[in-house]
Amino acid sequence: MANQTNQSADSIFTTTDFSLFKLVKKLLQKLNPREREILIRRFGLNDPKKQTLEQIGSSYGLTRERVRQIEAVGLKKLQALRDMEKQLILLRDTLDDLLADNGGLMDKEYLESSFLALSHEGLKESQRPIYRNNFDFLVSKVLVDDFDPVTSDLFNDAVKLKYQAIDHLEKLAQELVEQVRQTRRLFLLEDLIKLSFELDVFKDNADKLVSANKFDLASALAGYENFQDSQLINKYKPIYSVLRATRHLEENKFGVWGEADLPEIRPRTIADKIYLVLKNANQPLHFREITERINQIFTDKLANPATVHNELILDSRYVLVGRGVYALKESGYQAGKAVDIVTRILRQARHPLTKEEITKKVLEQRLLKPTTINLILSNKQLFQKLPDGTYTLKE
Image (cartoon, rainbow, N blue to C red; front, side, top):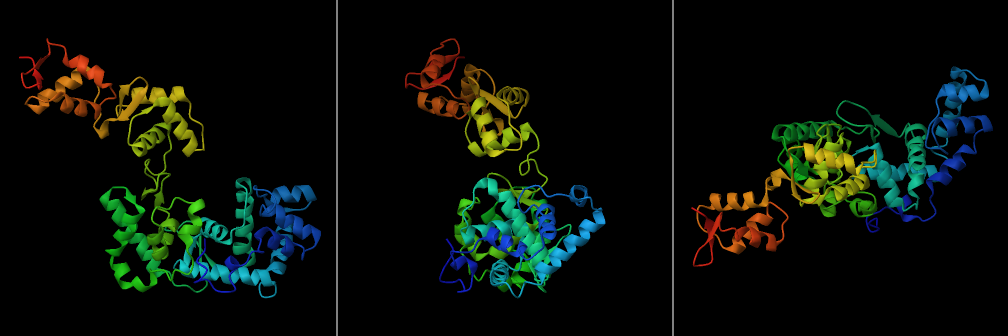
């Protein structure tokens, strides 16, 4: 929930009657029917899919250039309302405050999700794409003179405050990307923010990189995003906003950050997804459970249990530790028969072990019932039980 004590009285987030959809609809009523229909179709205001100039022109019997001209006239009329329409002024001022609280720059998608969360405008999930189109229409087309677009090799599609200098934010992004590349590892958000404290750009601009904390953004976004440390994010919203906007860094589905092109961050194949699911589970899983988790987390393409099982069999990174159950080899699980594992444990120990010690070590590598381990140890041709109850290999 937004922090009411820190919010200005004229913020949209303190009102209960604001609706982005209603505002767009009200603005469009200022246009003639053809202008209104062309803008609706061109920018996907009633449908997630935006139409091209050619598509719109063909339905009206107009040239591409004529449609563009009508679009431009309609937008100019709406832009002229920026200082006349009360709700539009309120939106502009609220976005100003939100951007300022995040250091002056935000990725468009993050700005939209933050605004939606703080405004508490209840939406069905199916409405989100259309809401996003309406929001982008207002920010990028109607309030075009109030916010500057940021497009570069460094940042994703983002916006910044008008006349806002972002040199320090660009430098922060560049140095964080370089540090992540040099370490060649993955980070939790907390570790990335703490890493920024060590950079010269943070020391030189600490006052600009600590949020005024006007909005309790992390708590508001809890229903939309995966936040683990809301206090840290609220205090250093400008740093988090830079991370969200940076093109070369990304957060995966499990809250881990790294270079955007890494398979651990942006998995492209079924093999990448299997690895991430098992890594995050931190325990062995049946191949059907792995399949279910992949389909719950990664919705781009459904995984098939037979395909997942086949990948697990063929990939040397995984170990069969039970009937249909697989684990990551890097987690300490070993391939081979259970009797071979017990033999290996006793050989590596180089001294007798109790049944409890053997059982513990075996269960760290394979999923077996204790009774199965007892049965293995009863093989007198391979193992010897000493008078003190410990076990060693048969000479």
